[in-house]
Length: 110
View (cartoon, rainbow, N blue to C red):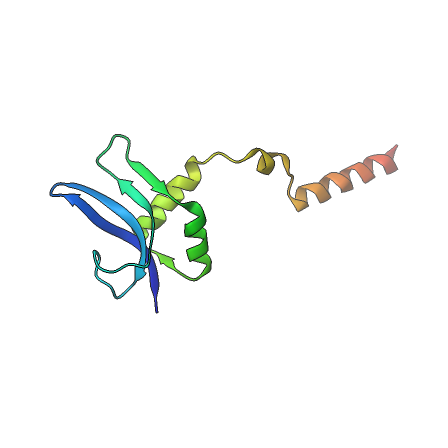
């Protein structure tokens, strides 16, 4: 079964909002779905987007493919989220290795 993360249109005429859902790719746009991940309201200023990142990550790991519109929303959300303090403090393995090799070179030079 091909699973997609996509938008389900809801709301009144000329006042749409969308739910971000997980559904079988063969199901109709507003038909059956497996899980709800959040919502997107383009009519507010600025547009309101609420998506459960943990659920999205879980479904992507399971092989769900996001549609183009959902991919754009997810990329915008990732760009807006600030890094946590731990991510800022923890150097990557390559940076740590470079720092150690730099210290060893300083010790041998002096």
